[in-house]
Image (cartoon, rainbow over all chains, first blue to last red; front, side, top):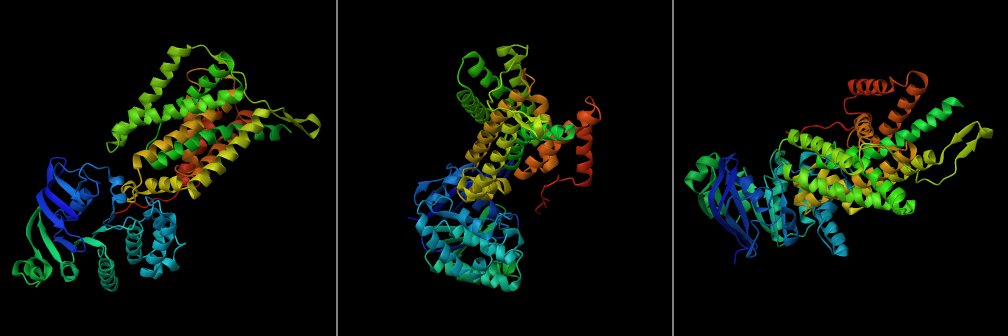
Length: 236
Length: 293
């Protein structure tokens, strides 16, 4: 059974159909990339999965459980975390408070401390700056904070929306290394990226989106060598 | 001694404004709406105490409790019935609804209690304090009001800073969607905010009616508007701002009444507000909000 299964999903913004009946699956342990141009619907798909936007038709199953109509705040405790586009850290709260909010739903208080230590190990810079107000961090640090905050809920599946957007090249490589580490530590990853080359390099499989439809899918290394993908998304 | 006495009663009046302003400011900060019915919840609080103590003969402590329970429930119900269905629609629709709720409460009180003023028996049983050989008298109501304001501001600040629900409020206030992604129940948090704001309105109602024992269905309306002014004055969304704004407003109002003109005092209060907003549009403690692109 797939960990996440999206079936015939349709999403509308008012009268405009943003997602036109797409289906895809994410299996446990995989890194799945959704790639495509601006406006293809990548962010909309993630937002629909975590209940930020309602689906018009279709279904979303997480561990075989229907979550299409589940209230957004009830999805996190099921084991899914979402690192939103644009990071969306709580800019007026401290780094530590942001991380603690990531563990908002957890009841196992003692183990939260353990998770916090792990997050600090992965992002030593967050530990150094734990008392700093999040809004004063650089873009790359905020991205790390957004990822750390998501990891605080101890998710089994993590959705990441454009983690490399707007970052300097050094940070971009670092972020992709971290995504790979997160995957290697046993968390399943659904990654939305405009940086198709880097995303395909770390993904197992990928789906290519165009204006609300999936136009291509397959193993990441196959897509990396696909002529149409190369031409449209890899700039070769 | 005259000045000192005017100043102290100004601080006391301002403390009532501050307690009301806290409700405005919290609801604005978290639900992003101006609840113009807030002032009328105060009036309902006044009638609740009046009914419990003067009509049913309950002890004042129980009467205050009744008012707090009634107003808290009322606040939550108003939010659920009138505001929640409009979440995500135009802010103007919510604003107009709030004004509608305000008229509804006033007219409901008119229907139930009639238009005649009820004379309210003070529920504060603290003896007045005589200072400087009797030249300066501070009434029990004044002392209790100022003390209540200080306790409420400190309590609320600690709640927001140190408790999980308080942190959730801050998160919802800054970014509702991101808060939801943390697993925070946004609707629940907004309802809690209304509950706290309305409980404070009940306390404000008790204090207001104890100091100015003339209860009509319109009792809450002017203090409500002034407290809103105080919240903007201090920086809307800020808890200490609401206190500073409220107290300044009360002091300015009282001193203008004493030294300039009692008829012009409201005009002076609002003129000061206009000047403050011209110089510092976000209010005294207001944060500069940078719009995210």
